[in-house]
Length: 290
Length: 337
Image (cartoon, rainbow over all chains, first blue to last red; front, side, top):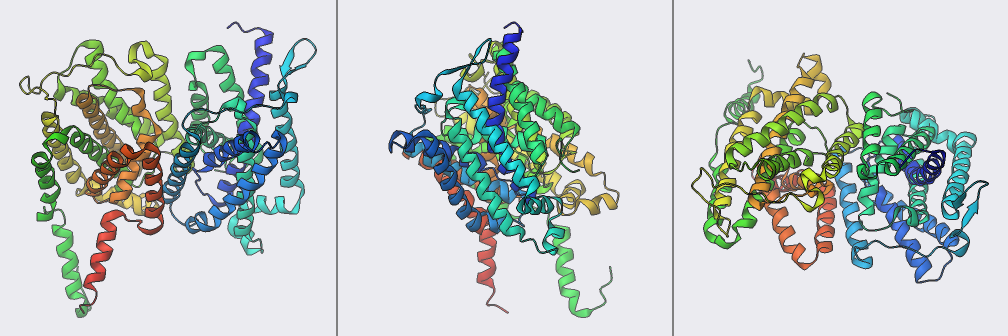
């Protein structure tokens, strides 16, 4: 495909929508990993659970699309807190290998469970009519659904930025990411903080998974395929860095889209190549601490 | 070394005996091999499956070197398995060369070169960066294979693999008897090599790196080179197991690079127990039997089961099956003063 202005705009627009999806899902993973150094390979499963829950809510229970997104945020967030308290909390001081194994086990169980109830084939939902059309943007039109994803992403970024940078709880999180022991010794309850961010992060992952069903698809393999992308975003951005996660999501989202537009056969080659190049130069990620 | 306190002398003597004889072959070590031989006669019609078990044991053994002994957590061991599988497959399908033994050497060489080069770069990293980098390397190889699918056959597999008879004499029978013996012999030879490595000073240095990397640096041990070397050796052995996979199945698809394979081999090792050589054997047999048995019921059942087992092992049996056996044995012995 030739590289004209229209193509460039398409790449940037689609890449932005994809980047918003990556950011919404990955930001919780980044903060929880930054807080506890916990390697959570089941994060993709929470996003997948959100997708399937939205599917059931809209298809079988007749709940409209937007409220169902709020419901999955709350439900998956609450369920993840149960997991965190009963399973994850036991392994905070365990080795990285133990954490990897536990969360791979949970991801496998989730994949098997959702395959059992929903079947292995990809699923799709019917979007509400106000999201299916096109929005005229002067000289060309843009699909409303992707505009909506970008809008949700921007709103969430603004809200999270405010919480992170301007509130007491955000200051506590940043302090704990910087230096957990110091934060604990001045009286910040890091364990409770972690439970809170874990719940919100998993809820956001579920919201992202539900929001982007028609963009990235939904099947049981989602939990592992996209997990790799989320890990890439977190690693490239730097653990626990809000800004890093955003920048990494934008870089990877836009470059991946560009790769697929311009050289379709290469598939996901670009996103891995670029992420590896960045990590080789900066092992702690773009905004991570060495 | 002199022992000042007389009461410590027996313990000291025991420790010395243990240290000087721990690399000796024990009678119990014949057991897995006897079981393997017995299986040949008891289940003559299951030898195709048996070969796959032996291949996975060999693959897990290679991971034990880096994970169990050197303590490197990687999610990309399937990269070397896949390179070995594709070396043999492409040699046969594209160059018409199907000699099995030299094929193993070629696979080992290709995987070793890849292991050496990637090890030089990747082993400087730890933690999340290392996990993501090893995982990405494997997927990158898969993507490259898919990019050149005219040459590799892509996800449909390499077409037209023919493996010549062993030594030009022993052809492959329908029941996989030849393959089973072939895999068994290769496994034994490489097991012997790994065993020698583990009990050598080099193996001791690896355990030192696993237990306390800072101290190894402090006493002047060339940590990074040792890691690169063991990573290369493990890659070569993984390559051989991948080559055996292609040879015994006469096919290979890009699925050999799947994350499931990297995770599966890690699960095998964890099930059996890391850093104890025979963990790979126990874990490999149990994993493959469970997979065979449960997958027939339904694939979801198998995946759920293995996930559940993994969670249980991490929470309650962190040292694997052998660890459980040891704990149980220790409890039985305890009543004696």
